[in-house]
Length: 302
Image (cartoon, rainbow, N blue to C red; front, side, top):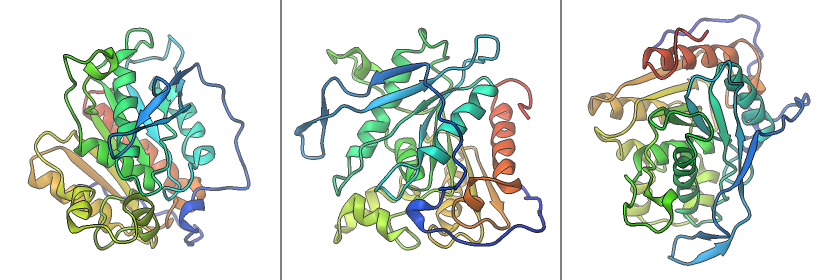
């Protein structure tokens, strides 16, 4: 476990969950390099049916001079009722581009108790990124996923529930693997058992899910030797999403012999002081250093 630094003078508070990352200061929204439809008109739902879907991936590509071939599919948080893209999306894409990493923002469909829908969207986003790797100057073996809060549940689900691709699929995108090559989980919802975030659980699984469904989406219980290496960051004073979510995932990774690092931050609550300040910058620096150690990006990247 990486030892955190202590930064005096930080305000300690916990923001309401779905609005944890909101701030009065909203950075200018950058324009994506590419927009691409997530699904070809119709998107699958839990029960084998399809629905109209106009969702697009927003693809932010670094300059050719900075591009290093790595890419991250980014899942903003929001309690499974909204997407906090203004704090956990666009500024992160800009930062990652500065470090040569392509960023694909996924505003996954909100589940409304249709438990497979966010996972299906995340799997599709990873496959689309691989299918467009040449056009986007991306290495198809260095595609990760990043999720914050409830988006961390989307990301940890994608990291533990994936398919290698259907070689016989008529859609070439579906022939690609949906397994991410690495994962970053920042104050993530991981479990659907005790220590979960109740609102996210209800939005995903409904008010009275079966024990089987709770276990299926308690991602610490789904880790195995094939789970990609993962970096996690969590404040020890996070009340809406207790750090036990990240601790359990890290313990499961270690038990399965998979590379993992958990950065526990001394304060900041949920959202790490509104996605700003020294602790916010600390997880970012540590995540890049970890990614360089995994040889997914060059150098120390600090």
